Image 1 (cartoon, rainbow over the protein chains, first blue to last red):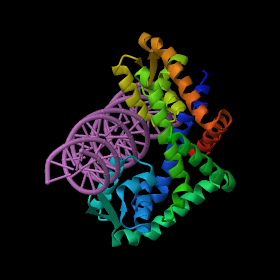
Image 2: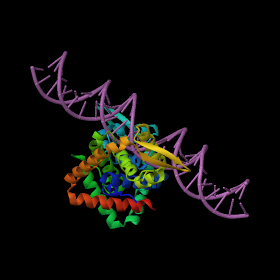
Image 3: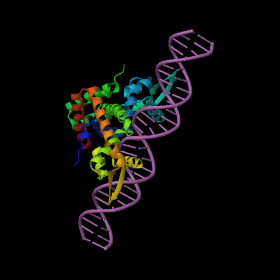
Image 4: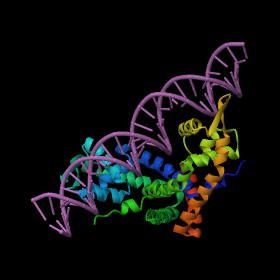
Length: 142
Length: 142
DNA sequence: AACCGTTAGTTGTACATACAAAATTAAAGG
DNA sequence: CCTTTAATTTTGTATGTACAACTAACGGTT
């Protein structure tokens, strides 16, 4: 068997692998909401701060502005959020339909959390999430 | 400021964030090879085990088989690998052109590694990579 | 008030990635 | 040997995500 340690030693590789694994699980748990997890979180942010600007959404979700435009396009098409233009910014509001889904979204988040906690152990899972968050913050500003 | 702890507590979210951050850095460091990092690693695997099957490549890189087909398509189009069909499997061989790039790919990997080690600290970087690998393994088989 | 740099958002385009279904071929059981 | 089953790969299609280039609006300077 050839040497493949260069993969397992590489954070680029392992981080992407983790991301694919957890994304798959998250999609399964969010399936019953009819949303993918990212959209669920966007809606939660919009419900938490109605009128939040797209810039803020992009920052909080840490995606590129153009990506956020696409997300909001889709949610708007599904009548889950509304855009209101105010000068050069766009404010995003949840619709009643979105508010009606809030509980389901929370449930899915909880189930996702429970599921990976069960696999990884509650302690390690929390620790991992924290470590990963810190690392991504440091890598982002460089 | 509204509560956004549900994002920072969520491994789906933090793992994706890390993945995007490290991917960006990896792409920068691999830019001089003219390849994206995944392709670089695929080539390294093909050089390490000439004739490796696509199935094995997909497993080692932990991507879906269909994804691997697309990767090999692109590398073949660029004359960096050759396919040889053998029964129901396809064997992948590196071309001379690919071998000529090996050193550059290794250099890029090293630079990538050095760069995130510098940001995160060598110790934590190694620990993080290990933890992340273990977690992804566990999540994959569930 | 006309100008210019900065900020927010959008659009065109491209890439990585996946799933499901189809194609191909090997293997196994009668 | 023929039929069914399993394994490997490919193809069609869809989603997430980004960058670069563009548009529009704001804020300050002359």
